[in-house]
Image (cartoon, rainbow, N blue to C red; front, side, top):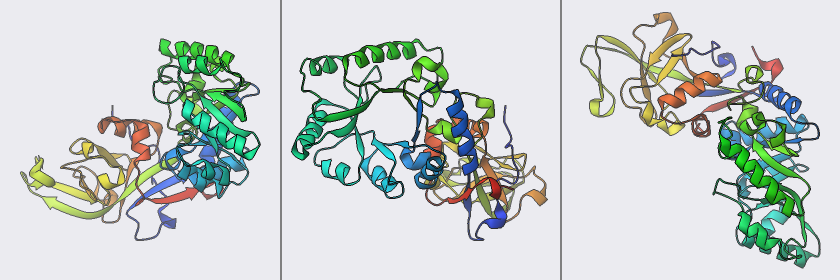
Length: 384
């Protein structure tokens, strides 16, 4: 079933510069709502960290993190050091954790910007310990253990070896031990419980009192997965499923693109590169000002759909780097004109639908939204 967008128009066109051809309307009040909703469903005593890596999944790390900070969120995760540096410049008092840990010769950067590494192997542990010894003080860290994803973290065997020596973590202030669930979006998957059990066993061996296991979907698995810190990312933006109180979660972004040209065609006329589509009838086609250079994937060629109000407009021909063509023959002319806005998505359902059409998933679609989008940040009082 094809789902129409929930809102029309999709962007506040009255506040956009006239030259803009693609826009993201980012609702910061929705992020605030989702944050407090998440707080209400985690176990008592559990804290919330905002995961704002990859530019907050394409929405903008600085405004998203700043909004969360104002609501009381003090913990943030990023993937890489450069993200941590950028965030530290605007949030001088926040706890900022770097998931990739300490690469060789980056210790000074962590110290300069007061970043906390997530230590993922024995070499990182040893180098951070050495730094602590040289400074004569304990240094904060999170210890990442691998409970079944085989991506980042120390294995059970490595933890066993480390705990055989009393000084393995000497000089370190281990704030949390953490792991990452590989199948949390599949609530009934037995791997979730298996990972939690391994996590519990590894945690019992370590001199760490606090723990973190759940990402956005992991929160849904219940309080036994919450521990002391949960790490929602896309869930705070309204685009993760499953997620607690999913029916109350508000989507935080709407994407739209503008018509830059209209064409009247005859039956059999080719459209786009390599003539992958030929008009099946005399048609009216709208060229939109965005393409795969903006995260509107090439896979959407001849299969994606955009919307003018509640009217669907199928993509015809190949998606180009800067342009895409939609068939608007069956849409009333007063809805489609040069300069009119088409909606790409504005809800979890329409993001999921577009992702499926592109043979991908929500995370990739959102994090691929390019820098050419005009990002319009709205608070509650700004909404129409």
